[in-house]
Length: 434
Length: 160
Image (cartoon, rainbow over all chains, first blue to last red):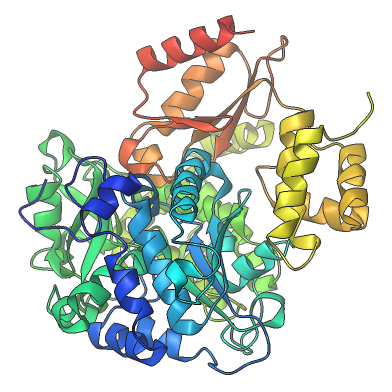
């Protein structure tokens, strides 16, 4: 698959099996961490330069250091495996191929922050992967690696899986907290931040599954070793997901900063039917899309993507060929956000529906001359005006697609306003019948 | 039919409750158990779940309504949930919807008269590398082709 030695999706047969994992040095990092002080572990993670893999790219070590060391309240860790961002399918690879490295990372995180309970939030649709992870957790319990007084160290912690039930918004960290508490998954206002007021009002840290799976190699080989992999400002490997019009879709673990063209042509086998590229989504559907001109020489990490006004997000890359109808794609993405908006903030709840309505009429040949401007206006009024980042996620694809693919929008609008009157009436009738 | 959890489900609920400091947090697990046992979440089922956890029915309803995977109306034995989000759409997700819809002669959100199949359009199911795909109850069918869909549906139609 790649000439690079992966650190999460290791090329070892049956690595998901606890015996195989332990034979290859598994849980060694946890044993080492148990002998380290919490401060030393956090320093090691800080020096590694590891950033969160859920999309926000926040430095993990710093996040951990926000947790109060002295408190009367219980502390919690939440591992975020909601993974509902369209084009993201990396966490399920970890549950399937290397669940123990994730569990080990979770244990080290719990030890570093003095946490006795960790919840793994997994989207409800991932039932087969929940079963796989539960088996791995059960195996680790039976080996005495999770539970009370682990290996006589005096350190105790439990890991429980919390199954979601179909809500994209629960990947937002504070919505995830509400969902674990058994409520509707509506994001909370920040501040207070989860490190001070999280689950049941107690200090809580939320980390992505991939982030936690990176912890054991950092403890084992040192933060400095990790910091030299990939781009210095976004160290480590990333689990890039390739999908869409691509010959070899799938998850590829490669150093951060891998060339996008390498990902597509060297690893992904090129575009299906050798067609040219029209649009690329670089990191899940909410990240601003890229044009074919922007991908040459582009390195895939957060810093480099900022130069083309986009972000790495979850690393889910969607390749679209020259025949792709951009308006249809953006309409489908907007339909998703319309469906998934939690309904708490007016700009997002109403705005997503308005954007969908406008995109729908442009797509169906009933667009008006002023529609593109209107669409941009609605998107601008959602962005930054909501409690959580969902509003931005919904506005960006629309706003940036208009900016970067204006001719596609204009063409559809022009075609529609130039329609003969009879045809337009006919089209309207059809729409009413629908 | 009397609405009551099986002994096994009551045990599972107790275990779930032990994972959390509050009863409320076990609600999502309880609704899952209820859906598996009763097929869907009727008002009576939700009231029953609420009474077990001492949660008002209105709160249970609010939670059940928020999450799409909880069935608030009856669904067929095989719940076909076809992903049509961006990656699947590019790889023919809507063709899959049309094909199944024609083959079973049902529209989106409808159930076949024999109660075997319900067809719905789903949002991204995290299977973008193996598009197009669908979820049937608890498992995924990926890299769908017409032949593969035929084989899957024929097999499911025969199972009792």
